[in-house]
Image 1: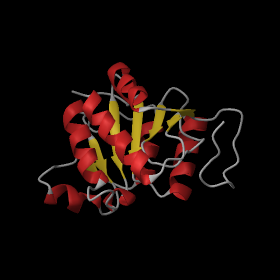
Image 2 (image 1 turned 90 degrees about the vertical axis):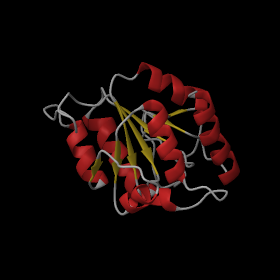
Image 3 (image 1 turned 90 degrees about the horizontal axis):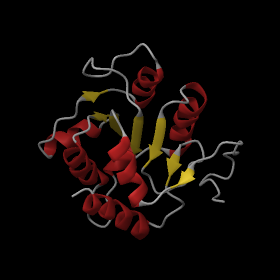
Image 4 (image 1 turned 135 degrees about the horizontal axis):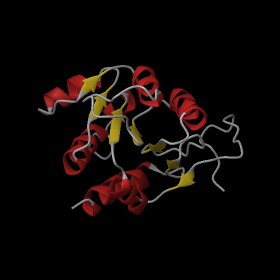
Length: 174
């Protein structure tokens, strides 16, 4: 059983399943309407590559909409990539868990939410709100720290293991 990155994050009866890159690809294949939410920690470089670069490649290969939060939009625009929306992570999450919301494109809600680059102490609360308020929606933390409030999360990974996992996801999406 994995321990939360923040040991004060007390687990309940329902905790995240530890995932592999294959799990991520399978989730994408079975998702009807996935969405990627990119947060501010995605601006921090890993092995001379920013997680923003991963997000762009991931979004292009999967054709899923991207929501840029905080100040990540500037990094997307510098790479000539336009996100589907720019808004706060709490705002987009509240909209996604609202059963009446029809999505960014008006075609319906989302069934799988991928989060990348979250501040752990904040993102865990966001994931908890999904876990308890929208049980039909799967939440996936693509960050390197295990988060028990997600539906799926990586275990606690080193930077090198995390970087390799993100690269493997892109390779498997061919």
